[in-house]
Structure formats: C-alpha cells, structure tokens
Image 1: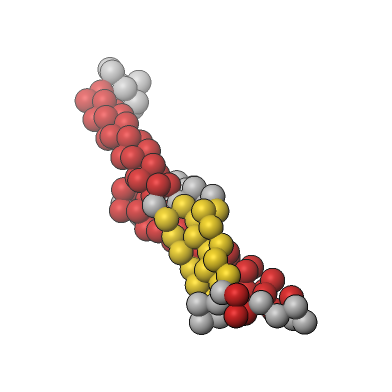
Image 2 (image 1 turned 90 degrees about the vertical axis):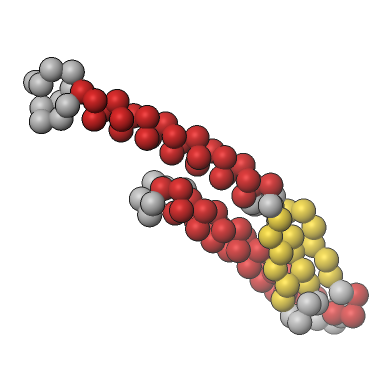
Amino acid sequence: MAKGGFPGMGGGNIAQMMKQAQKMQQEIARVQEEIGNQEFEASVGGGAVKAIINGKKEFKSIVIDPACVDPDDVEMLQDLVLSAVNEAIKTAEEAMASAMESVTGGLKLGF
C-alpha cells in the first residue's frame, strides 16, 4: 500500500476528497433545511381545492371552495382533495430533487 493512503492514490488526494465530501454534506443539510421550510401549493378543479405543504411533506392547509361542496357528490370532492395533495407532494419532491442535484452535481445519493 502506498504511504499515506490507498495504492495509486496520494495521501493528499484522500484528504482533499474528505474535505469535499464534508463540504457537500454541509451543503446538503443546508439545502434540506431551506427546502423543508418552503411551502408548496397545488390547486385542482379550477381552484376548487388547494393543498399547501412544506418541504418536509407536512400539510399546512387544505382549502376547499364551498361552491364545490355537493352533498350528492362527495366522491368528487374526495378525488379533488387527493389530487391536490398528491400534486403538492410532487411539487415539493421535484423542488428537493432539483436542489439536491445542484449540490451533488447530479450524483444519485438517494435523496
């Protein structure tokens, strides 16, 4: 084994890689916190139902336009709520993935 590291690698390269990995880890944590504090909104049914979540995928609110509440068609309202919630989650996930890609340079690290 080469002195100070792995065969074929100088010891300085390992130290440099460790510094870069630590810096990337800190940047990932910062971005996760930043995105986690942002709010993401999705609206469906022409604005009949709106879901708002944060980047941690915690629901902040669901707003339902009273005009779309039809006691004879509860299933439609349920479908609208599900659609709004799923769209808000998708928006938050896409924002997190995009932010992580910019930090990791496109490396797939499982975020």
